[in-house]
Length: 548
Image (cartoon, rainbow, N blue to C red):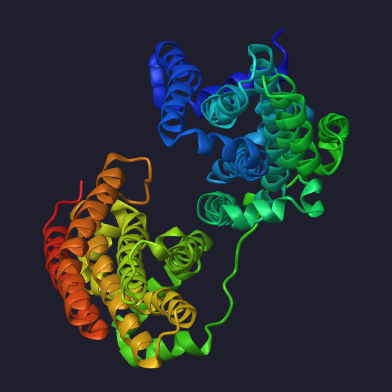
């Protein structure tokens, strides 16, 4: 009889590689081959070529500073390998399948270990692709031997396996807790979006604030991070299998290593064995499911607050009810709130990256940073609003479309109500980044207000485009359908071209005339106008479409 965990591992692998379909046996080895070619041949040659062009001075700087930089890189890699599997697994929280397994005497530890083994071949590809980026600079700077390179790859592999195990344990525990809620699937999708910024922070830090992050990670507090242990072990292996002079190695060790690398090896080994043991030991206790499934619970909505009652009173009658229903339908889905929060997070990063990153010194002009921050903020917010407010949120099913078409002016009323509710939600979505940017870059209250109007106008244009395209080609809540993919691509493509063309004139006026406010307002006009045309076209097309 086939072991239970092995059957679960095979099923997990098939699910993770479902896009390869029947060609999995051919395409998966090809993907592995491409990853190996990238890691073993392309990355070393590309980095070696770039380092050679920079010169010997850079080589000396690299050899001296790379141990500290590696701590930052390993932190980003560790968080990526830890969070991404959790985020992906939370996209679909449905424990009904698990309850079927448990009813057939499948132990939780079998489910846990099988899921872990099934993920290794998939996320191992990322490890194969990322590991050479870590190893190759050492090979160039320290001339590491073949044995040293193999040892470094082995350490990275073990570290990645342990991290995947931790992510599997965490995601399984989260599935068990979230799945008991009647809104478990919605909560899971929201958390999958909320976890993404955790990956972005160390990556952005390593790219834009390297010196500050390296200085931070040279403090004793960084020694509690498993990524620091792994980074110091890699540094130690590369130094002691290199052709550097012993005196150089001694100086580097005294500068970088707070504790002995032997201690790091012991700590990492104990940490790995501990998390493996605790994961197995606590599986049946932490992930026990009750007799009644969470799907039998019913979520109840609370009473309407003052704001909702105000919306209903302002618009009045049947149309006010449609607007309120549309507002509730969007705002009560946690995944939508998480997407909006993610968009605000990215928008807040823009003035930080441009105003305080390496881009701040690219152009010696006081107008450059505020103009570029505002323009990029408007572009990103507009594109993101089209993706968030369009897509799957418009129509739930063909039955809903049939009901709308059966009512007098049902489709136009529905689309207008949707757009109005989205425009109300778009106000804080545009206001928060505008206030943060104005405060960070010392804008006056007047300029901050103009920037909000600029960003909000483009956000409204993005809403018009996203809803118009989705109305032209409804996807009916199916994110895996071809219609959804086409709608997303078309929305992003149209908004990118439209916003870029609109911003060119504003940039020219802002730089040549030095008039910030007028440039912002001028560049914000075309997007909502063209978006309104697309919205009207989509509404007419949806109104006269046939319901199959």
